[in-house]
Amino acid sequence: MSSSAEKFEYQQDELKKRAKNKKPKTRKKITKQTFVPYLFVSPFIIVFLVFSLYPFINSILMSMESINFGQSKFIGLANYHRLITDPVFYKALWNVVQYTFWTILILVPLPLLLAILMNKDTTKFKSLFRSVFFLPVLTSTVIVGLIFKYAFAKEKSGVFNSWLHYIHIGPIDWLDNAGTGMLALVVICVWRWLGVNMIYFLSGLQGIPKDLYECADIDGANSWDKFKNITLPMVKPITTYVITISILGGFSLFNESYVYWGATSPGDIGTTFLTYIYKSAFSDGDFGYAATLGVAMFVIVVVINLIQVSIRGLFKEG
Image 1 (cartoon, one colour):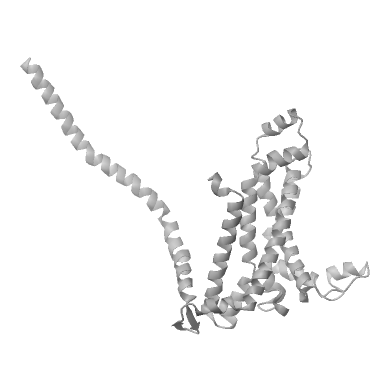
Image 2 (tube, one colour):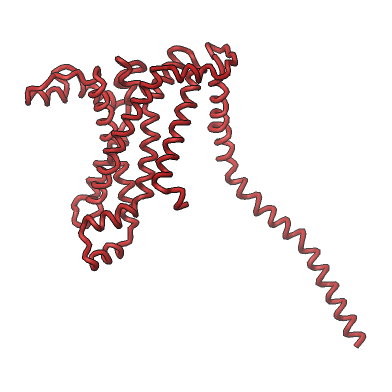
């Protein structure tokens, strides 16, 4: 009896020793597993801190300074007060709001319609059409802008004026008028990004289970019912994404406007946030006010995107 109890106590002591010896190894293994993921993501974190967060914070500080050719002076909120009373700022804001509105109005429903056509089994030469629609985005924005600039030329030899000549209209001075100037910007944007948005919607449509449409057919639903109750809700995340990037693209419009008019346009009809920032910084040498414009642009874009995402209920889905 005594021998069995001693043997039992000896076994218990051995087990405790083994458990103690295992603990440091386990902690070491857990430490490695915790460290390795941070090691892999560290390049992204370093790049983000150096090239995104630091410039952003520095821009906020610069927006409170008067900077002219290397000399800086802290002036508090004076640049923001100047921004509020600056008519060119409101003109640039109105231009990008109009541009964003018209591009979203066209570049959401039209690519969705094309994507539905491309997703049908009965559509022929689908690969060819996808390539044709996607081709414009692969071309240089500057080259495309120069081509469209000559197409919208005010002379009779301009492409669009030559077309209007057949119906005895014109010639029209497209790029010196606010309405036709905005039309020229929207046309080049639609031509360039129609295929990209179509690809986005097409990827969303191909992820919809065909069982849903088969069940709808059994219930006697027509094409409009299936589009309204199945297609639209299922592509809602893609639609939100397309609207979001359209807002970002609209407020960061620069290349097309600069190719058409340069940094300044007649009556500021082509002035955007970025062309005004470019002009303030590199033409006027006022880097402090340019930073203020950049901060204002950031705040406006974030607020608009938060509103549109809230309206579409994305936060509730999360």
